[in-house]
Image (tube, rainbow, N blue to C red; front, side):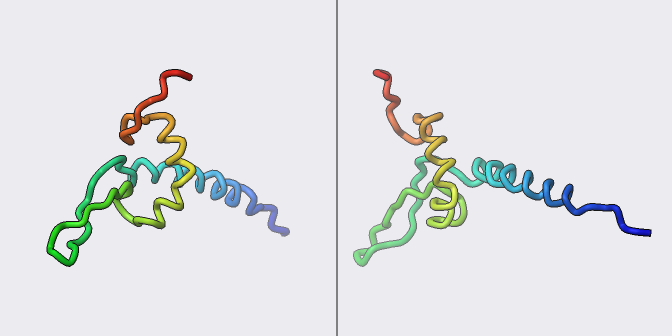
Length: 87
C-alpha cells in the first residue's frame, strides 16, 4: 500500500506559526523608554543607557526593528515621542 500522507500541512503550519511567534514575542520583550543602570564609569558613577528590551540587547533591537517602528507610530506616548498633530 502506498503512503498517501503529505508533509505539506506540517510545513504550512510551521510557516504560519513563525510570524505569530515573532509578533507575539515582541510585546513580551519590549519595554519602551525605560532606563537601566548598566555599569559604572572610572569615577564610580553609574552609567545609564536606554534599554528597550528585557533580553537580548542589541540583537533584540535589530531583530524587532520593523515592529518597533510600527509600535513607535501607533503608541508614540509610550516611547516618549510627542505626537505630530499637524498631519
